[in-house]
Length: 179
Image 1 (cartoon, one colour):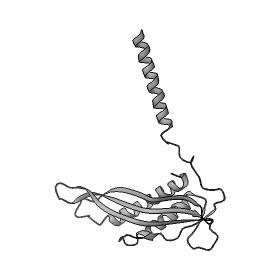
Image 2 (cartoon, rainbow, N blue to C red; image 1 turned 180 degrees about the horizontal axis):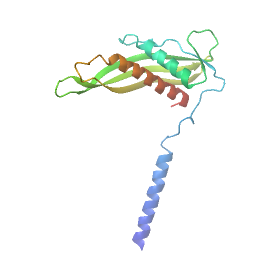
Image 3 (tube, rainbow, N blue to C red; image 1 turned 60 degrees about the horizontal axis):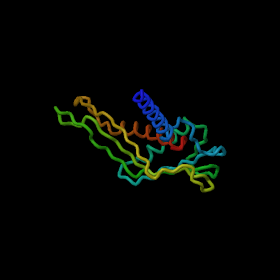
Image 4 (cartoon, rainbow, N blue to C red; image 1 turned 90 degrees about the vertical axis):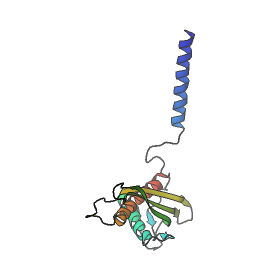
């Protein structure tokens, strides 16, 4: 009888501890952490800076972020500073890498790669208040390289376009949901 109570008590305590751990882990559903002010209507997005050796990476990523902001938000997005913007989204692409992940054991060719993009990004209101900031924003994506030698083409450019679009989706989500 005493052993049965002790077992039930242990299960009860374990459930309470698990419940406390789950509720205290910082998890929240999408859209509940939005901190952008209600008076924000126009965002100025200048061309991002590029401190890497990757050619035109700032142009590709800036265009993808602008497209994502326009498609996912009701904000007016401007690309020239006409003085009407309520906030400015600035970013510096400071790291890019394309690293092989796996190799084909028969041909010795690369069969998958990992593209990594690192950036410093911030959204600042026209009064100078930082609305969102991430000095070490990192995005990674794996892609498969064609194994057929006859139809092989350099996949780094199409892969980078995909990465730029996914980078933009991730960045905009982080800004809107204040992660």
